[in-house]
Length: 311
Image (tube, rainbow, N blue to C red; front, side, top):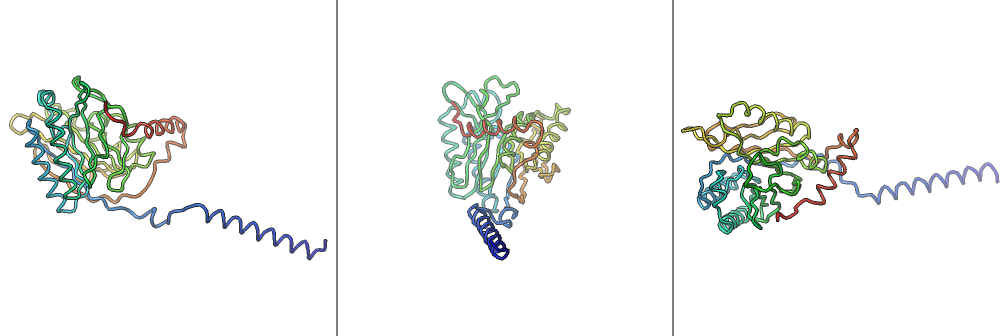
């Protein structure tokens, strides 16, 4: 074969190789860079809500608040732990499952009518068990998640939950945790590795008389945000100024860098509203370090068991 023929054959091989690379690249779906990096504006509200022991009254007030927030363009509204029933042990034990279900259904109807998503604390009674649950409703009134508090703080009348929460709400991968759960970083880290960008937190934390707990409560949420690069929307119950009963207020919205964007007072029934610039992302660093395999196994277990019914 002459030198000219050899050069021609080499050029043909290079042309074929280039063609193959182009075809392979074209066969792999790649989202546009702009679509990957463009933030989604998610308008959220943390509702600092004082519950009574009357379920119907609580539901009526929650629907009224949701209606007003929907008119203001809020897409997700968050209420405290046990907002629907009240947090007192007596109110929880005496709550009838049928009454709770009816109240939840009325809130679902409002979400459907006003096109607003809601997360609120409720109790769930089944098979002789009582769960301290977070009800997650989307803007169509559909039940997206019923998560039960995994790490109880001595409430022996409750049964611990059976799964870590991961769901999509208003187009944003998210998670939810309840009160004492905030002390356990894995409940946010595993969802964040999977792609969660917002962690919703509902609580009825200790009261103002336990002053030593207030700074740690705040620090824990800030840590969960910055270590996982997620926004946190936290709704807590306020304190009663007459006798300091109840919780201590200080509902807050935390930026993904760990800084508090907005925070409520101790005593008021306040509503914090903020528009979050949410970008699509997955927490990758833990997978690249010493415990990467361990975290992968955790994420696999979370995804396998998510939305597991409470029974």
